[in-house]
Image 1 (cartoon, rainbow, N blue to C red):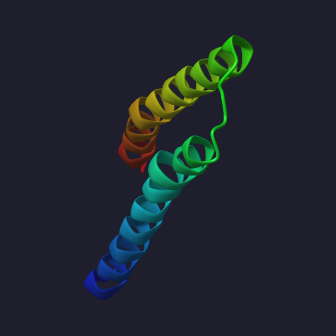
Image 2: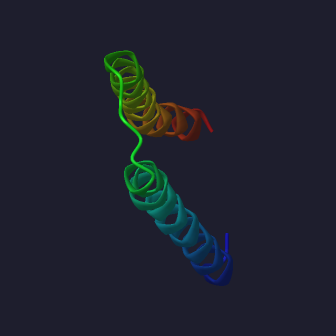
Length: 76
C-alpha cells in the first residue's frame, strides 16, 4: 500500500473510533441519565455481560489476527 492510502485509512479509522466512543460512552448513557431511567438489576447484569463479551471478543481478535497474518506472511 502506498503512504497516501495508509494516511487516508488511518484518518477514517480515527474518525470512526472517536465517533463510536462519543456515542457509546457519552450520548447513549447520557440520554438514559437525563430522562431519569432507572437501571434494574437485570438490565445492569445484561449490560455488564455485553461489555465483558465485547472485551473478550476484541481481545481475541487483537491477539489472534497479528499471529495469523505473520504466519501467512512467513509462508510466502
